[in-house]
Length: 503
View 1 (cartoon, rainbow, N blue to C red):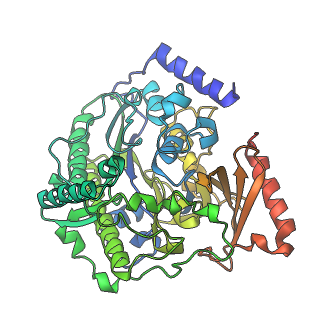
View 2 (cartoon, one colour; view 1 turned 45 degrees about the horizontal axis):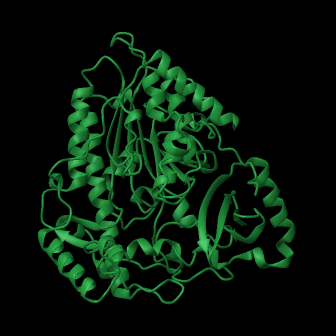
View 3 (cartoon, rainbow, N blue to C red; view 1 turned 90 degrees about the vertical axis):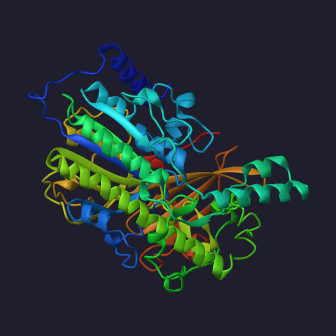
């Protein structure tokens, strides 16, 4: 058994034996933790330099926190990314690489962040999407997870159009699996109050919980997961009205990188575009290997995405305002993170599920009260697997030996960024009926990717992008013969840091 798994098992056993410690209010020294997850949020926020995006509440939070400008997820798709964040373990350790695997089946004894905090006297609760939707992992929390009741998303009219669309699909002889999978429109303007929307209702749950948790003896770990700007882009009208659709810039590189191997997008997943084709207005969208979406479709999606960002920003603001109202700001560590980025036409792609920068880089903003670097950006290369050990150090808890990230607490205190830091991401892919795993390493200058044949673990394809001359990753220079020594050096660096897979 892998040593990290053994250590995780021992940690879980200790938790079961000793149970959560109880601390009186008078003895409490550990800070509360407010843990805010946002689904599919790329680094298109005003505080990240994208000035046409309306994100005043996250921007205000960033002005009092440390904004990590080069933070990278372990996998650019929801389930495995969240598993790595919540367990502090890399995907090859958890064996979770896709949307279909529940981590308790592959790493049943992994000790999650809230489990660890509960074992050290915290009361932990969760609302919204923190783990992947189907598996809220109730063993992690002090209370069972509850979704909001009676919340809305699509309008009644949109649901009626979906019903008619499904009937037409049936009449056209489409497979029942496709009929069952299709959803209502990918974008819709709705006229409801914020808190009738599911994400507004999640904010309500968090606000109600905060008022209750502050009365407890223990410090709290409150996790709040917002689902927008994940598809569908269905939010109240006022957020759509923040943007002029025709003025929004389109992607500057709506094409595949020169000399990109096809496996980088994959013929089945098409760089994540298959997710968009689950919606009735995009079921016939062309593969990015064939053609782009129309300009009207691109503008509709970009408009909907940014409207959804602004809507979620408002819900984040409501939760942070309640923290202030309860006078908890100076006693609470706040972390805001997203599970991955999202393509908005870059490389002729939409959605996520690649190893490119646009998908693997995501917002990470941390506020430790009175930290020296608060209010400033940090350009160190960091990973989302670092969140777990960071929270442990900030809360004064022991850092489990099994964790595979490193604490970012020194950076919050103003320590200089290490010059040789790297970040690792990966993606499992079926392409041309063969299975591959793509391992990506982001250095200060380069993104290097090796695609390994899953049956032999031999290197099948390579990618190399020079961020000094090509920050948008438009030219794969791995094919240039003169770069062969550089490829071998980067490969050696990667496999010195990571356990190399075996056939």
